[in-house]
Image 1: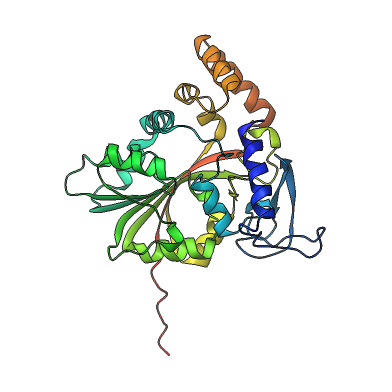
Image 2: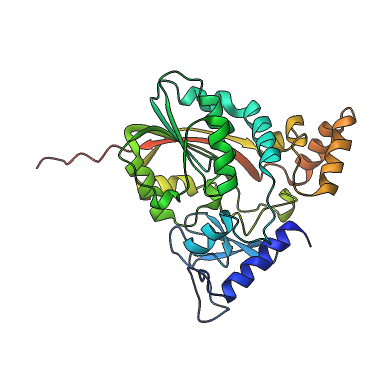
Length: 325
């Protein structure tokens, strides 16, 4: 059984045992679920993968899994307290993070220039915090729910890692920068997530995200492995504007890059995952001169320009000024 199938079977078992029922429970199994962001029921199935529907909302453009989990259930998965859930060991995960930040650290560091405090949400094994630990007079901390990854991050980064969900995290300190790198898709409560972020950010602070955005005509075949239902949601092309309006943020920067530019980067193919067959294919491809360029051209011609990797920087919006009578 594949790791994704193991996760899905675990979810089914946990539901049966009452560990967090779906937040949008339906009496009628055929009823249309409400969007977890805007709560509209005007949505449709975009495609089906790993025995889950991925739906797209007509109102806010959010893509979300159906059934959508409760907060408690999702946190249970992330902490990996069930033996059926297979996760990468920390050493391999750290190596993947190292390769990832070799590509992307410069843009993140540029946005954090001048910051005196930084919180990395979903810090994994701590590579990003390790890189920032060399910045003078910068206070760094992380949030990581997986206990093994959190302990690993503390060792490599030498800073405090909080083992508490972002939605429940409270701190006397305000942060000049909060990073959420490939984390947005995993957090199940929009209201609690953005309320926490607003309370943790300094008035001129920056929320820095790398996440997926995609068009409404995205294909199941834009990715081999979508990661659902572990990945709960993805932004559509209009979702960010909806989020900013609802939760009071302004967009400082948004770099939207076609997924194929990231997918066929050589260092990505050097990152080894859970599947031994896929790892073998990766090793073979990187040894063949020009293979990645050919694969990218094929991908672009068939399903390109529907899926994007976006680097996003937000800041709390200034409150609207009252107009004097």
